[in-house]
Structure formats: C-alpha cells, structure tokens
Amino acid sequence: MQRVAQFRQQHASDPALARAIAEVKRFQARRFQATYADLLHNPRYARATRFFLQELYSDRDYASRDQQFARIASTISKLFPQPVVATAAALAEVHALTETLDDRMAHAWRADSLSAPQDGEPARYVRCWRQSGDRAAREHQLDVVLQLGQELDRLTQARGLRTLLKVMRRPAAAAGLGALQQFLETGFDAFAQMGGAKEFLTLVRQRESEWIRALFDDGDVACATKLSHLLAAGGAH
Image 1 (cartoon, one colour):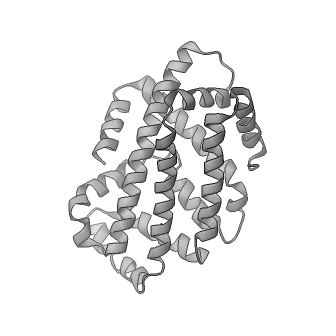
Image 2: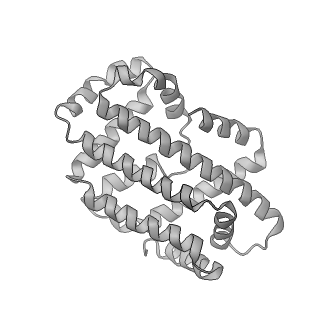
C-alpha cells in the first residue's frame, strides 16, 4: 500500500504522467470488458466478472479503499477472521503489482506519444507493453489474481462468515472502513452466487495467458490487429 501511495503521489505531481496512466488504465479496462463480454451476459458468471472488472481491472480511483486498508494493515489479523486476512493480503499484492506494471506502461506511453507515429491505441499499447517487458511479472500478476479468486471462493465455504461480515457493517463504518467492507461483501456475494469458482478461474487463466503470450510473442501488426478486432467486436477472444 505504501508503494501504491508513492505511485499516486508521483502521478499527481506530473500532469503528463497522470494523463498517461489514465489512458493506459482506460484502454486496459476496455480490453478486459471486451475479453469477458460473454461472461458478463452469463447468469452464473456475470456478478463475479463484474467484481473482477470493477474492483481489480477498472480505471476507477481506489484511493479511499487503499487508505482504509493501509490504516489497518498491521492489525487486520486481529479484526478479521483468518480467511478474510488471506483475501485482504491477496488483494494488496494484486493491487501493488498492477500499479507497478501500470506505472511502467505509463512512462512508456508518455514517451511513445512524443516519438512514435499516431497509429492508434492498440498499436501503441503493444509497443509500450513490449518496452515495459518483464514477462515473469505479468505471469505472476495473473497468478496472484487467480489466488485472490481462490481465496474469495474459500470465503464462501466458511460457515457463518457471511453473517459475520453483515454484523461487521456498522463497526466497519464507524471505524472508517466502509470501502474495504464493501469490497469484501461484494466479492463474497459474487462468488457465493456462482456456486464454485473453478470453471470461472480456469477461463480467466486461459484468456489472460493467451493475451500475455500474444502481447509478447505475436508480430507487432498481428497483435495490434487482434486487439483492434477484439475491441470492435466487443467480446471476441
């Protein structure tokens, strides 16, 4: 959370970098939305898909949730049951990894805008992805996202935990932890409604692994064209 706060301060003090990070996040949100358009229309997977898109991969401002999490990070194990602690830890790691990689992309994006031809966002995204590099970090990011999904799935199997989360609403609100409480409740309900997350997480792994492979290995034009077609179709993958 400290690392995330540092990135946020850097972006706030550099308007050009702030614009770049916003554009990168906006493009990625569009890509994720298109990649999972079919799941967003699937009664079983829609809520969990929206949760992932809105809570992990969107261009929303998570400052309030981050501040709340940072404030109780050292004592979270005393306030929440162990399954919730594991979920919160996975969330923190996902968030830090995502912000680190997005920051690298934003620096490349800003530099690209000054030196490269204006050939569209998909081509620009492919160039910046490759300039940022670090395939291992991208694969680890996916692994941690899947770990978070597995932790949320385990939460739904803990007896009485949903009731406990509901009871905690007022204390959490009084302690200024409303955003973190909402994240936990929303995630719990989304995964509980799905009735088992194995198939959902398998689809996420397959699709994201393929995009990681394509963004590193396919030809520049071929990958940019694939991205353009996905965005235009709004859901082909």
